[in-house]
Length: 294
Image (cartoon, rainbow, N blue to C red; front, side, top):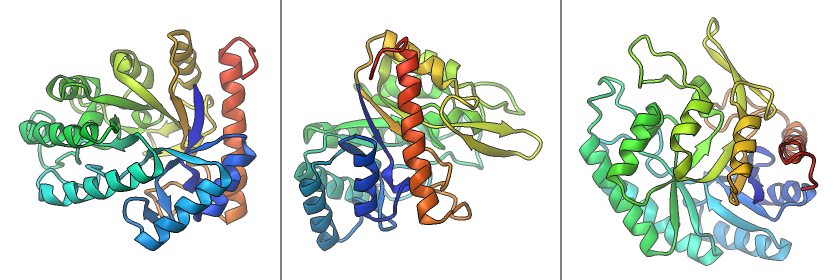
Protein backbone atom coordinates (compact mmCIF):
# COMPACT_ATOMS: atom_id res chain seq x y z
CA UNK A 1 0.00 0.00 0.00
CA UNK A 2 1.27 3.47 -0.80
CA UNK A 3 0.18 7.10 -0.63
CA UNK A 4 -0.05 9.54 -3.50
CA UNK A 5 -2.25 12.44 -4.52
CA UNK A 6 -3.40 15.05 -7.02
CA UNK A 7 -0.57 17.41 -6.14
CA UNK A 8 -1.96 20.11 -8.43
CA UNK A 9 -4.25 20.83 -5.48
CA UNK A 10 -1.13 21.77 -3.51
CA UNK A 11 0.57 23.87 -6.16
CA UNK A 12 0.17 24.85 -9.79
CA UNK A 13 3.79 24.24 -10.77
CA UNK A 14 5.83 21.07 -10.54
CA UNK A 15 8.24 22.55 -7.96
CA UNK A 16 5.49 23.08 -5.41
CA UNK A 17 3.92 19.73 -6.22
CA UNK A 18 7.22 17.96 -5.55
CA UNK A 19 7.81 19.95 -2.36
CA UNK A 20 4.38 19.05 -0.92
CA UNK A 21 4.89 15.38 -1.81
CA UNK A 22 8.27 15.24 -0.10
CA UNK A 23 6.99 17.13 2.95
CA UNK A 24 4.47 14.32 3.42
CA UNK A 25 7.26 11.76 3.11
CA UNK A 26 5.76 10.38 -0.12
CA UNK A 27 7.54 9.54 -3.34
CA UNK A 28 4.67 9.55 -5.86
CA UNK A 29 2.27 11.99 -7.51
CA UNK A 30 -0.90 11.30 -9.46
CA UNK A 31 -0.29 13.90 -12.12
CA UNK A 32 -3.23 15.81 -13.55
CA UNK A 33 -2.38 19.45 -14.25
CA UNK A 34 0.98 21.18 -14.37
CA UNK A 35 0.80 24.94 -14.86
CA UNK A 36 -2.86 24.62 -15.79
CA UNK A 37 -2.57 21.92 -18.46
CA UNK A 38 -3.00 18.17 -18.29
CA UNK A 39 0.30 16.34 -18.36
CA UNK A 40 -0.54 14.78 -21.73
CA UNK A 41 -1.18 18.26 -23.17
CA UNK A 42 1.78 20.35 -21.98
CA UNK A 43 4.45 21.20 -24.55
CA UNK A 44 7.40 18.91 -25.21
CA UNK A 45 9.73 21.52 -23.74
CA UNK A 46 7.68 21.79 -20.55
CA UNK A 47 7.48 18.01 -20.30
CA UNK A 48 11.28 17.76 -20.55
CA UNK A 49 11.60 20.15 -17.61
CA UNK A 50 9.08 18.16 -15.57
CA UNK A 51 10.91 14.90 -16.23
CA UNK A 52 14.21 16.42 -15.12
CA UNK A 53 12.83 17.88 -11.91
CA UNK A 54 11.07 14.65 -10.95
CA UNK A 55 14.26 12.65 -11.54
CA UNK A 56 16.36 15.08 -9.51
CA UNK A 57 13.88 14.94 -6.61
CA UNK A 58 13.46 11.17 -6.61
CA UNK A 59 9.69 11.54 -7.12
CA UNK A 60 7.81 9.56 -9.73
CA UNK A 61 4.40 9.73 -11.37
CA UNK A 62 2.46 6.63 -10.33
CA UNK A 63 -0.67 7.47 -12.36
CA UNK A 64 -1.73 9.86 -15.10
CA UNK A 65 -4.94 11.58 -14.00
CA UNK A 66 -5.89 11.99 -17.62
CA UNK A 67 -8.83 13.76 -19.23
CA UNK A 68 -9.38 10.82 -21.58
CA UNK A 69 -13.10 10.07 -22.14
CA UNK A 70 -13.95 12.29 -19.20
CA UNK A 71 -17.12 14.24 -18.38
CA UNK A 72 -16.24 16.94 -20.90
CA UNK A 73 -16.01 14.43 -23.77
CA UNK A 74 -19.24 13.46 -25.48
CA UNK A 75 -19.74 9.99 -26.91
CA UNK A 76 -20.90 11.78 -30.07
CA UNK A 77 -17.51 13.52 -30.46
CA UNK A 78 -15.11 12.08 -33.07
CA UNK A 79 -13.22 9.17 -31.53
CA UNK A 80 -10.04 10.29 -33.27
CA UNK A 81 -9.69 13.16 -30.78
CA UNK A 82 -9.65 10.70 -27.90
CA UNK A 83 -7.18 8.42 -29.66
CA UNK A 84 -4.81 11.35 -30.19
CA UNK A 85 -4.82 11.93 -26.42
CA UNK A 86 -4.15 8.23 -25.90
CA UNK A 87 -1.12 8.22 -28.18
CA UNK A 88 0.39 11.29 -26.51
CA UNK A 89 -0.25 9.85 -23.05
CA UNK A 90 1.37 6.51 -23.86
CA UNK A 91 4.58 8.10 -25.12
CA UNK A 92 4.89 10.30 -22.05
CA UNK A 93 4.01 7.53 -19.61
CA UNK A 94 6.63 5.27 -21.13
CA UNK A 95 9.27 7.95 -20.71
CA UNK A 96 8.28 8.43 -17.06
CA UNK A 97 7.97 4.72 -16.32
CA UNK A 98 4.33 5.23 -15.31
CA UNK A 99 2.10 2.19 -15.74
CA UNK A 100 -1.39 3.37 -14.72
CA UNK A 101 -3.82 5.91 -16.19
CA UNK A 102 -7.20 7.19 -15.02
CA UNK A 103 -9.86 7.14 -17.75
CA UNK A 104 -13.63 7.57 -17.83
CA UNK A 105 -16.55 6.41 -19.98
CA UNK A 106 -17.61 9.66 -21.68
CA UNK A 107 -20.16 12.19 -20.46
CA UNK A 108 -23.75 11.27 -19.70
CA UNK A 109 -26.06 12.35 -22.52
CA UNK A 110 -28.29 14.78 -20.65
CA UNK A 111 -31.10 14.72 -23.21
CA UNK A 112 -31.53 10.93 -22.84
CA UNK A 113 -32.56 8.58 -20.09
CA UNK A 114 -30.14 6.18 -18.38
CA UNK A 115 -31.17 3.29 -20.67
CA UNK A 116 -30.52 5.34 -23.82
CA UNK A 117 -26.85 6.24 -23.51
CA UNK A 118 -25.37 4.74 -26.69
CA UNK A 119 -23.94 1.87 -24.69
CA UNK A 120 -22.70 -0.17 -27.65
CA UNK A 121 -20.58 2.72 -28.91
CA UNK A 122 -19.26 3.47 -25.42
CA UNK A 123 -18.24 -0.14 -24.89
CA UNK A 124 -16.64 -0.31 -28.33
CA UNK A 125 -14.54 2.77 -27.64
CA UNK A 126 -13.60 1.63 -24.15
CA UNK A 127 -12.48 -1.76 -25.46
CA UNK A 128 -10.20 0.04 -27.90
CA UNK A 129 -8.81 2.32 -25.18
CA UNK A 130 -8.19 -0.72 -22.99
CA UNK A 131 -6.47 -2.52 -25.86
CA UNK A 132 -4.23 0.44 -26.70
CA UNK A 133 -3.05 0.94 -23.13
CA UNK A 134 -2.59 -2.69 -22.14
CA UNK A 135 -0.62 -3.35 -25.34
CA UNK A 136 1.78 -0.63 -24.12
CA UNK A 137 2.08 -2.22 -20.67
CA UNK A 138 -0.21 0.35 -19.04
CA UNK A 139 -3.23 -0.35 -16.84
CA UNK A 140 -6.25 1.90 -17.52
CA UNK A 141 -8.50 2.35 -14.47
CA UNK A 142 -12.02 3.74 -14.78
CA UNK A 143 -13.24 6.34 -12.30
CA UNK A 144 -16.83 6.57 -11.08
CA UNK A 145 -17.30 10.23 -11.93
CA UNK A 146 -19.74 12.22 -14.08
CA UNK A 147 -19.80 9.60 -16.83
CA UNK A 148 -21.69 6.49 -17.92
CA UNK A 149 -20.07 4.18 -15.37
CA UNK A 150 -20.67 6.77 -12.65
CA UNK A 151 -24.46 6.68 -13.05
CA UNK A 152 -24.56 3.82 -10.55
CA UNK A 153 -22.93 0.52 -9.66
CA UNK A 154 -25.08 -1.46 -12.09
CA UNK A 155 -23.71 0.62 -14.99
CA UNK A 156 -20.15 0.07 -13.82
CA UNK A 157 -20.67 -3.69 -13.67
CA UNK A 158 -22.30 -3.73 -17.10
CA UNK A 159 -19.36 -1.76 -18.45
CA UNK A 160 -16.86 -4.24 -16.96
CA UNK A 161 -18.84 -7.13 -18.43
CA UNK A 162 -18.56 -5.54 -21.86
CA UNK A 163 -14.93 -4.41 -21.51
CA UNK A 164 -13.17 -7.56 -20.26
CA UNK A 165 -10.23 -6.91 -17.98
CA UNK A 166 -11.08 -3.29 -17.22
CA UNK A 167 -10.11 -2.28 -13.67
CA UNK A 168 -11.51 0.51 -11.51
CA UNK A 169 -10.27 3.47 -9.55
CA UNK A 170 -12.95 3.97 -6.92
CA UNK A 171 -13.54 7.53 -5.75
CA UNK A 172 -15.05 7.61 -2.27
CA UNK A 173 -16.41 11.14 -2.66
CA UNK A 174 -18.09 11.12 -6.05
CA UNK A 175 -21.21 9.12 -5.10
CA UNK A 176 -22.18 11.72 -2.48
CA UNK A 177 -23.22 14.34 -5.04
CA UNK A 178 -24.07 12.04 -7.97
CA UNK A 179 -27.60 11.01 -8.94
CA UNK A 180 -28.27 7.30 -8.44
CA UNK A 181 -29.72 6.24 -11.78
CA UNK A 182 -30.15 2.67 -10.61
CA UNK A 183 -33.32 4.00 -8.96
CA UNK A 184 -36.43 5.74 -10.35
CA UNK A 185 -36.77 9.50 -10.69
CA UNK A 186 -36.45 11.77 -8.86
CA UNK A 187 -32.99 10.29 -8.46
CA UNK A 188 -31.60 10.14 -4.93
CA UNK A 189 -27.87 10.59 -4.39
CA UNK A 190 -25.68 7.51 -4.32
CA UNK A 191 -24.26 5.68 -1.32
CA UNK A 192 -20.46 5.41 -1.38
CA UNK A 193 -20.55 2.22 0.69
CA UNK A 194 -23.18 0.55 -1.49
CA UNK A 195 -21.31 1.46 -4.69
CA UNK A 196 -18.01 0.26 -3.24
CA UNK A 197 -19.51 -2.98 -1.94
CA UNK A 198 -20.88 -3.90 -5.36
CA UNK A 199 -17.71 -3.20 -7.36
CA UNK A 200 -14.87 -3.84 -4.90
CA UNK A 201 -13.68 -7.01 -6.60
CA UNK A 202 -12.64 -4.88 -9.59
CA UNK A 203 -10.89 -2.05 -7.71
CA UNK A 204 -7.18 -1.56 -8.43
CA UNK A 205 -6.75 1.97 -7.10
CA UNK A 206 -8.58 4.42 -4.80
CA UNK A 207 -9.20 8.18 -4.83
CA UNK A 208 -9.79 9.65 -1.40
CA UNK A 209 -12.12 12.60 -0.98
CA UNK A 210 -15.08 13.27 1.27
CA UNK A 211 -17.94 15.74 1.47
CA UNK A 212 -21.47 16.44 2.65
CA UNK A 213 -24.36 16.94 0.25
CA UNK A 214 -26.74 19.80 1.10
CA UNK A 215 -30.11 18.86 -0.46
CA UNK A 216 -31.60 22.29 0.22
CA UNK A 217 -28.78 24.30 -1.26
CA UNK A 218 -28.08 21.56 -3.79
CA UNK A 219 -24.35 21.86 -3.32
CA UNK A 220 -21.42 19.94 -1.90
CA UNK A 221 -19.25 20.91 1.06
CA UNK A 222 -15.89 19.15 0.97
CA UNK A 223 -14.47 17.80 4.22
CA UNK A 224 -11.38 16.03 5.49
CA UNK A 225 -11.42 12.30 4.81
CA UNK A 226 -13.65 10.53 7.29
CA UNK A 227 -15.64 13.62 8.25
CA UNK A 228 -18.24 13.53 5.47
CA UNK A 229 -20.73 11.10 3.96
CA UNK A 230 -18.25 9.11 1.88
CA UNK A 231 -17.88 6.17 4.31
CA UNK A 232 -14.13 6.68 3.95
CA UNK A 233 -13.13 5.04 7.24
CA UNK A 234 -15.36 2.02 6.60
CA UNK A 235 -14.13 1.61 3.03
CA UNK A 236 -10.44 1.99 3.93
CA UNK A 237 -10.78 -0.50 6.77
CA UNK A 238 -12.52 -3.01 4.52
CA UNK A 239 -9.88 -2.60 1.82
CA UNK A 240 -7.02 -3.16 4.25
CA UNK A 241 -8.71 -6.17 5.83
CA UNK A 242 -9.10 -7.66 2.36
CA UNK A 243 -5.37 -7.22 1.70
CA UNK A 244 -5.52 -4.19 -0.57
CA UNK A 245 -2.00 -3.27 -1.59
CA UNK A 246 -2.61 -0.48 -4.10
CA UNK A 247 -2.46 3.28 -3.88
CA UNK A 248 -4.55 5.75 -1.91
CA UNK A 249 -4.58 9.01 -3.87
CA UNK A 250 -5.84 12.10 -2.02
CA UNK A 251 -7.99 14.65 -3.85
CA UNK A 252 -8.89 17.08 -1.05
CA UNK A 253 -10.92 19.73 -2.90
CA UNK A 254 -10.63 21.82 0.27
CA UNK A 255 -8.81 24.81 -1.18
CA UNK A 256 -9.44 24.27 -4.85
CA UNK A 257 -11.88 22.18 -6.84
CA UNK A 258 -10.19 21.23 -10.09
CA UNK A 259 -13.27 21.60 -12.30
CA UNK A 260 -14.79 24.60 -10.49
CA UNK A 261 -12.66 27.71 -11.19
CA UNK A 262 -14.82 29.80 -8.86
CA UNK A 263 -13.39 27.97 -5.84
CA UNK A 264 -9.84 29.22 -5.38
CA UNK A 265 -7.54 30.30 -2.59
CA UNK A 266 -4.10 31.79 -2.14
CA UNK A 267 -1.19 29.51 -2.92
CA UNK A 268 -0.07 29.16 0.69
CA UNK A 269 -3.51 28.01 1.82
CA UNK A 270 -3.75 25.46 -1.00
CA UNK A 271 -0.38 24.05 -0.09
CA UNK A 272 -1.07 23.90 3.65
CA UNK A 273 -4.49 22.29 3.14
CA UNK A 274 -3.05 19.60 0.91
CA UNK A 275 -0.29 18.66 3.34
CA UNK A 276 -2.65 18.72 6.31
CA UNK A 277 -5.15 16.56 4.44
CA UNK A 278 -2.43 14.03 3.64
CA UNK A 279 -1.26 13.84 7.26
CA UNK A 280 -4.79 13.41 8.56
CA UNK A 281 -5.48 10.68 6.03
CA UNK A 282 -2.35 8.80 7.05
CA UNK A 283 -3.61 8.93 10.62
CA UNK A 284 -6.97 7.57 9.45
CA UNK A 285 -5.16 4.62 7.86
CA UNK A 286 -3.21 4.05 11.06
CA UNK A 287 -6.46 3.91 13.01
CA UNK A 288 -8.04 1.62 10.43
CA UNK A 289 -5.13 -0.74 11.02
CA UNK A 290 -5.86 -0.79 14.71
CA UNK A 291 -3.17 1.70 15.62
CA UNK A 292 -0.36 -0.06 13.77
CA UNK A 293 2.35 2.34 12.66
CA UNK A 294 2.12 3.12 8.96
